[in-house]
Image (cartoon, rainbow, N blue to C red; front, side, top):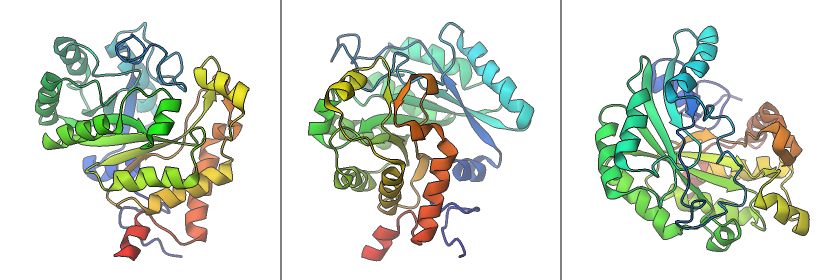
Length: 315
């Protein structure tokens, strides 16, 4: 069966980040994950002290650079490894661990400007919380977006307030909406993180989150599978409540249905989890990342579905 999807030059029936980068930059592009030494308002007492219940000790930065190294060394370590395989590749500097706009403006400037002007760095990606961008930072990001390809990644996880109380998210949907509006008002690219399999969410609830996001002015999405890690509040909760953890087949079917409700121009930056194997408790099937990706491709072919086809068919 011929692939009819507009944003693909392979068997993929959704808009991959690799395809987007290749067409925008005419080159192989890598994201270099960095640890800028930031903290989080959900840990330091500003809005909470324990963080989100699934958050690891590294602040979701398991694959970010070594916090003991300065940013240039972190960057060079990854670049050296990648350049052996793709010597002509370009790079996106990715501030990943914790909340990467949660600091005074002069600190942010120093960290961002250390890396985004390096040779062959074509962009900057900043992961943060929607409650942690001050007005002067919004204005600085607008200026920065005119100098490099800038993306701000916002953690939402779910639109359902009941779920966000369970996971101790400590910010509201209204707060998230305001952040998206402020960023887009400045023409800054927005990528939203969501998590499938959060405790007690149904398939319909997960799909509703995607339907909601499809109506916002966002440019990309990261779809994660909830993973239970050792030494987290989520692990303690799981030990007590044994809530349902999605099987691989359940996850694949949910993701494929979610894709159908997303505009085809929205870039799918991530479509599965990527946990640190040593700390993973459940689901163990996440370890085989490429197996999950293959199952998504096979499911979409089997049922002849594409990203955004539910929207097209309803028009």
